[in-house]
Amino acid sequence: MKRVYVNPEVCIGCHICELACMTGHSQSKDLIIAFRDEQAQGLIPRNTVDHAGWISASLSCRHCDEPACVQACISGALTKDKESGRVVYDEEQCVGCWSCLMACSFGAIKRHPIKEKIVKCDLCPGRDVPACVAACPNEALEFAEK
Image 1 (tube, rainbow, N blue to C red):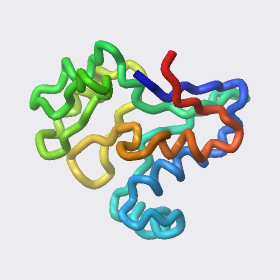
Image 2: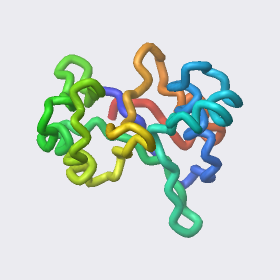
Image 3: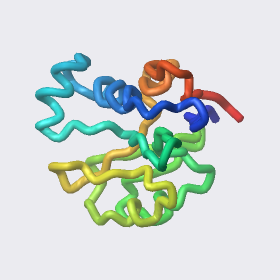
């Protein structure tokens, strides 16, 4: 399965991937409206740029082969799609217990700022390449099958 891979040696920590993610998952699909208006309503990026000294990298769900978050999910809101390999999240089934947050060793699952739900990367269904990868100006993100 294709996943998003990060090359921290060329990531400059610009956060454009976060903006692209947020815009891609916004209702307006407009960067300014998403950042200015929809963010106040709880819209957040599903990835996070982490910095450690001079090194930075975009972190998001790795859609693990054997995801601990799926095993920890008590409501069945997180499942592993056998056909695509993606870890799929059903917000309607989520009970907000945060078990998946604690189980993910990559810190790739976030709490929604308003709802008692989670937010995680969905690899941008319907797009050939996730928005974060398409927007990265330095090609620090790669969508590939390795």
